[in-house]
Length: 376
Image (tube, rainbow, N blue to C red):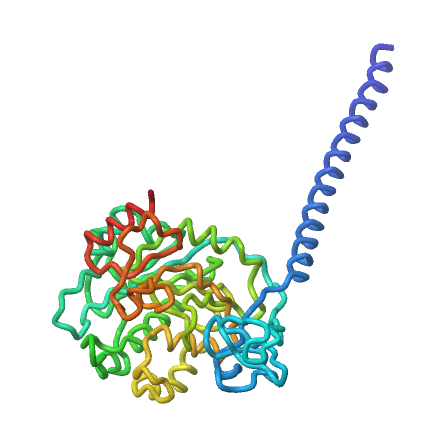
């Protein structure tokens, strides 16, 4: 009788246990299903979002042209405004002045392809052979930045490249790139006496592609050694960008110039980096002669930033205006009115600087004073 009583009790217990397991499995499946559904909905929601972009320089109109057909302007930060007859590019607009109606001809946008986080792969370049007799503090700046965990060394991943043999400390030798085509030391700047640097950075970008760290990052960021760079400020800035374009994105940071991708801070999305690095050889073949000679560039030989921007434009990477991201003495619109002609200007009191970077600070004492002030 005891044995007979035990059988139904044991059966019920097993049944109850099996039922509980089934419920747990069903619950887990439901959670997984809900997570997958939420992920799909997030992806769909992202694709419904759009990013306002600016078409490439070549696709847009000069200041003197009617921009009705293109709806965009070659000068960074300028807008194509309607007039009583036709349309014209201008930095600002006042209705009635010079026949402007101030209606914007077009706003260009693209759908969000992928939602981006703020994971950063950052790199800097130490130029061992500058071509100038002036003392360069780039290596010292980078060594002290690394010791303090500042600038690029606060990014999730980082590298430092050079045309020479050097090390940051005992644990990290700088990655040397080779002058494969004997291009590093062909052309000098007339005023500064330094070597034109697009060819050096072409080899650096090839090495970036080879290392592949950018593939695990949302954004690839190139930072000059003399740029005071606050990593967390960049993450906050990038959190406002809805996501990546199907063609990739780069952030243009200097207003009212022909090519506004100024090189002290170069920020490119994962897809943008993929496009740039994929077509490096093509851009070298297309642009190398012009990059040395200047061709259509009235300022002479190209810098590395002009080469990179033209390469991305050539392969349809989308451009986003980010003129409030940086404070740069090399960018005329960032200088105070009384310093408009001073290309060496930089902010003296960095406690008042709220941008991601402040540039340039070529002497270590000036650099770290500014860094301390920006960190409050």
